[in-house]
Length: 366
Image (tube, rainbow, N blue to C red):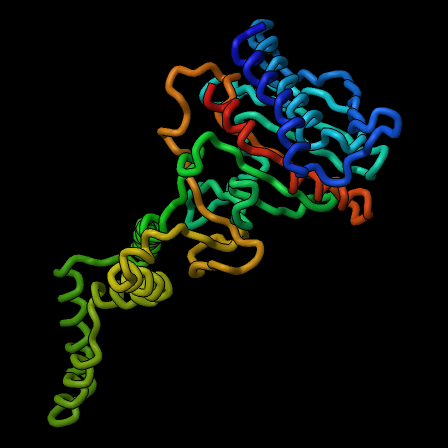
């Protein structure tokens, strides 16, 4: 038995006694004969393995999955008599950087609550993140946290079938697998994109607005004045020539006017963004950039509005250098349900009240 697995097992097996001593387990089921809490006795379903995973690696992953199952059965739900069927899920996915391992466990409570599951994922942030193209740049997004619960960032999301409650568990609260893109960084991205957009507009206008040589323009100007001389004379000619010269525009003038009209909207937005960069307080610019998930260009920041997303990028110093892919470095604990039944609400309450994230954090430190 590897050291990590042994430590994890010892940690989770001690938790029920501490919890019961503190009276923290809700609605414990007591055996009438012995007077002791009834064990949950969870059932094991077949694991799901997707992709090619080396056997030694899979063995380590399954050991971690087993320790996570024991953590749930003997801590969150110890003494409740609640039954669950659980299985491990292991995936090897191809990415631009090679093969990526994702795994975890899923616990099904179909006997008590329709379509209610509890999962713990290892090193997989994908349920919380998304991608969007904003100002012509690919940006990673994160659902805005609903706050802190069980001493961990907590998120609530609507799913296709109902809702999700998600805890992000890391070994330290100040170290997360992602970093927010600040408002200043995002506004700088916007300026760069607007400058590029402006240059493309100018190039297009120039392609459709030819500028002749100075000699060609001077010859045309002389010809126009000469034509007036054949039609008018005296004071009338002088007036016509003066009016022509006042209204005369060179090709360069026409090009400048066309560019001004074509770039007016971009220039207005650039002016607004540049004023924000120069006038907003440093603390405001250092705040995370929170925007609409359907925005395709800058529409202002949307802090405090429901359904918004935070722009993020991976934290380059979070993951331990040289660590094996299967080594747990963070967990996502996910409660999924599409039912508002009393049974589902009761299980959700048990999870929320009895999820001792300290045990998971200790597992991450090994």
